[in-house]
Length: 95
Image 1 (cartoon, rainbow, N blue to C red):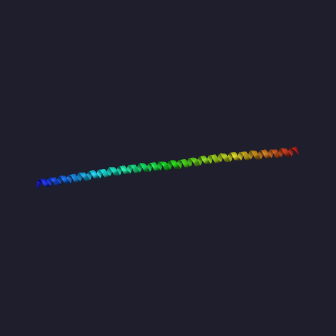
Image 2: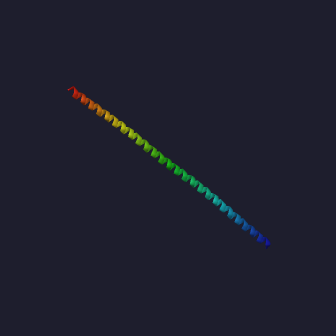
């Protein structure tokens, strides 16, 4: 009878140990899953930030290019207008 009681005590101890080990394994697996999810979230956030920064850089570069092109067009138009005015003035003076 004593042996049976000792045996069942060992079984209960083994079950407790197994339960603790299972809980610890589950805890470690959860921590690892959370770590991987955090890394993935950070990677996605970094990609999105980089994409937004790239879009903003491209937008600014486009604005600068457009502004330069507009200034150059205005400069050429002004030169052409001045040239025509000079031609017209010269033509009138020659008459």
